Length: 494
Image (tube, rainbow, N blue to C red; front, side, top):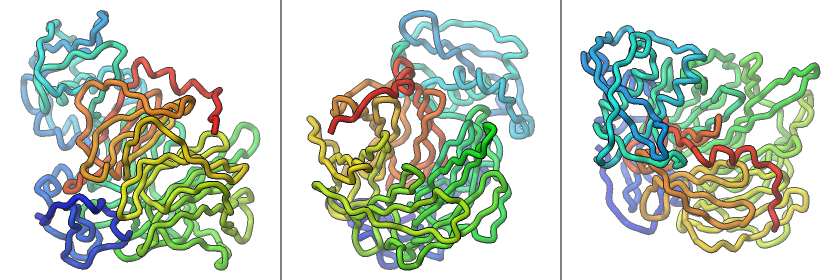
């Protein structure tokens, strides 16, 4: 096992933005170098389990429960104002082989997400149980099986949640997912497909691409032409570029920039054409290249990739660069540094940025010494920074922030002392934090995960808690807040 010591002045993976010397751990107990070394350290027992190595993010980790002859299933909503998870017992035998080979259809999965997404309870409580006997078709349906597995492997008694309350549940996925747990990876949603690239576990970085169908919750690993594939990396950025081809036809590319692998930091740009699945490396003017970096953020604005901050291995960065990609046939692309005005944020990495029309909302991060609680807005048209005064200071780094209509949902991260599992809501109209109670069993406290919004639900993949790297997928049902993504007509007044 990796040895750890404790302190309160350093932050995970950010101290000085470079790897610690070989066989050394950070003073805060966060292992910063072992997973970047060529030799593999002794991994935690949960990493060495056959399930996590062979098919993480899949149903294999639950396969030991499939051979029981008595399982539980439950319906996830009652018609009353309070949410009750009724349970029932039926006799049926499933073989492990049948479950592993099963691939749900899209029609089954659309209904499955409502039934499967039951909050796993965290505390025993008294509930009214409604006993029903399922039909044969219900028994064979994968959503009932997934629910039975979820209940049988976590808690036996469900919690009561208001019908309008947001709640967490852990999802069961199918297919060939990432072979190892992941952190500091990227996840980009295009339609119903989620593209997951790169990242690392406790010992290695990867350059593999996986695709999760959000309707069937089935993983695939597409074949790509690897002439110019990016090197294994973590804390890189991935930007989706959409191009209109006419006649209602569109093409999509993924642009990978930066990242790191051990002591190596990158400044190269790689492009994956999702129509041909061919990697390429665009020609870049060498005199315009920004410094090497990782832990930065990017967004696409007016056919320009906007890069903010990060770290180069020696220090944190506070610059803003733009890469014009408007012409796909341009023989040579060129970076341009943005000259901004106004009070700019201190140098930082592991922050988040959200593009709201012409404004970028930057929150949190760390310079390797301090964990930040500030919020800045960059007006991209005016190229001007503005600091936002908020009524509540919340420190975060290595978190995720996802726009949901007129709110930004901040999930997890590190506050300078410990990892968090909180769900925070930042109101983009009032520019203040709001609190809402969340039910169910939340993901384990973590950072360096990814979060995406799909079908009025937030999905969390992977992450790291200072010791363990996760291979799970969790879903936050927004319930009464499900209307928020439809709110688009608002302005940020700064």
